[in-house]
Length: 287
Image 1 (cartoon, rainbow, N blue to C red):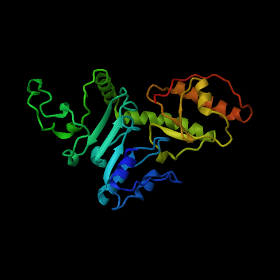
Image 2 (cartoon, rainbow, N blue to C red; image 1 turned 60 degrees about the vertical axis):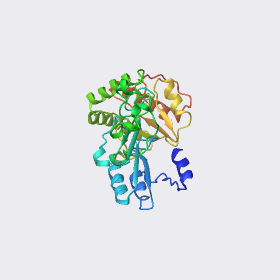
Image 3 (spheres, one colour; image 1 turned 180 degrees about the vertical axis):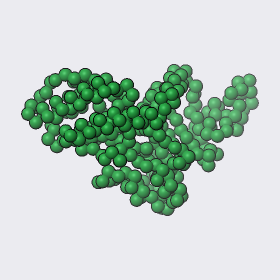
Image 4 (cartoon, rainbow, N blue to C red; image 1 turned 30 degrees about the horizontal axis):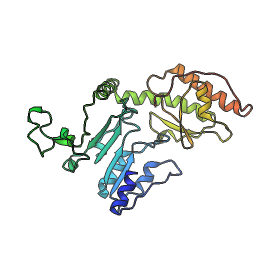
């Protein structure tokens, strides 16, 4: 909506990249980038099914075409490696409540150096150069803090949010992003392999992220798949026509085996009995 509104205000044309038939979002986006494009706004992966978007290639294409690159990393930051020096986004934003494991109300914004003299999003005294010296607050300052701190949200020192965010980010750092990604990739590969055997349709392993993926139900399945799993204390989400699997590190082999058992019961039993009521428990999804 912000992009649509901005385009209307400045008389720009908003172009949406349609879902590619071959599932290759990276190439579909690259095919639309040329010198007529002023801003490219993309995510690190598709939010419905975890389809991978190669930001390194897109970043290079944007620089070659003179486009501004804006990245929404909400769906992967904290669970998949991301190199700012390699991608070189102009702006990158991420909500904290997903893979960063932070409380609601916390988010991160990266602003590249070339934009740090731009007008801030809001005018808060906490972003002024003398904000940390309370004795000098009566001396009103027109100067902002250096770097990207001028873009900080007002009242950023909320005591009910920051302690939880700091603890979460420290824990992610201790685990290591690469370790998180590799661990979740192994879990998801086991689940994905079983789903394919049951007739689900998935993006190829080269076109999906390590930490989450979506699968389309077999054509023969009828009923509410998500609700049936919920009856078994297994929680996944549905986005459009894809059911999304997004485990985290607390999921172990016992949980995965219970999920596989429940999937088999639902899909195989669906063709014979539309009202399966076996009970399988598993730990809930973290998203």
